[in-house]
Length: 244
Image 1 (cartoon, rainbow, N blue to C red):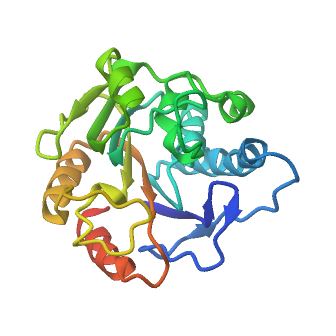
Image 2: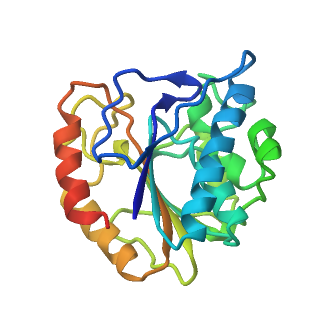
């Protein structure tokens, strides 16, 4: 295991980033002027390089960041290391928006769609990221879907399951955890809280089952909460108990 910290929310540096694990490496490069995707392409190139090095050394990188788009760099890095991973994606949201479907325009709502070959292609093209087959993606929970997301998922091969019904992979996989998948009562200060959610105990059981297969080749933890909110201690306890 190696822990990589990426203290950014999209292309904005987070000076008060509070990851629940102590990092072995912090990726904090200066970003050029330009649009958000162009700036993130530079940042995620660093992520891809670091992930590829860790995998080449036989380690499972845990990548901590402030949102879910960092996954583009993680998956690109796995591909560079010779692995085309399946995705097991825990999230309260669908993350399958496009610039045309998103009413908010929030870029952090698009990464699954980008990983399977759609939405904005600036970062995937810059990283030479190969699309992941929809049938190799499992969205866990996803309880807060906008109508275009629900329509896309209904017509796609992406599997959408509950937190108590996570299928085990039969091939190398990238495990992505957006902490807003959890019940906001257990993880305070979430940026995008959705009532209900997966209890931490259930999430821990699901994560352990996945890790015990030996097929998880990287883990992404999207720390989508406000610094000082009290989420860090709860998630640090969860991470120490359930992550490798």
